[in-house]
Length: 311
Image (cartoon, rainbow, N blue to C red; front, side, top):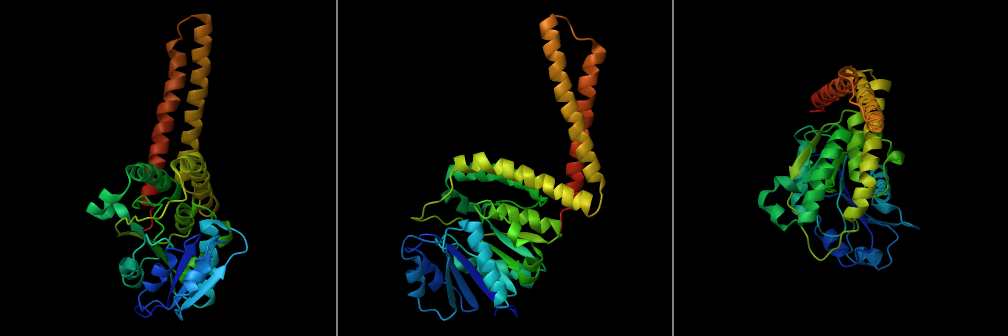
């Protein structure tokens, strides 16, 4: 146990025969249960984990590939079944050093947070080892995830080194969490719906021989759409369905005015180009004013949303 809390570590693993043994052996003594979810690996991941001989170890092999999110959710359910009060997700590739585990747990055990996650950007010189394309992608994803999730103080949303209280996990609808690499971002959106408090913990980047299973092309082609859908889902659930808020009014009216300005402006520009005539000032104002007012309303909605961030 750790400061009176029963702790479980969930380790999703897919083809991690080379690394899973080191991950299991590095677990501190205060960890009560280690749950390795072998996500239908094609190598000896299960055998390598069992070879450690750790009595705290539970290995579950899926009959078909669930995706990292699906494997984590399965591990979460197993952790709740054994009565865990704090559940930590740690990847099976060795990129998440166990010496930083206590920092995540302290945020929940001592500081009253419901969810804590790693942030490589707070670790200073550790950023020097992070590939430049990962830094660029992370910065773009961070801003989009801030907008979608409502946690404007959180950075490095793709960091999968995380800890969550069992009570918070029981409230979340695990069946609707994304089952692939969007899992960490989706967790933040669902946590915000219930007002759970989230904290970033400085944990340096650690890269070795392991290869990332996700590419910039894959992220760029799927994540923006998923984040936009989650943004409108959060606005609907939090600011319309559960408690109607001016945030929803400002946002919807602002977006409507912007759409009007863009569409009507395009129509006016095409008509003027075809007729080869100057557009009257009054018509131009019918385009410009909605755009300005719409932008101001959307900006005000964002400001109010930032103020609503659970702290």
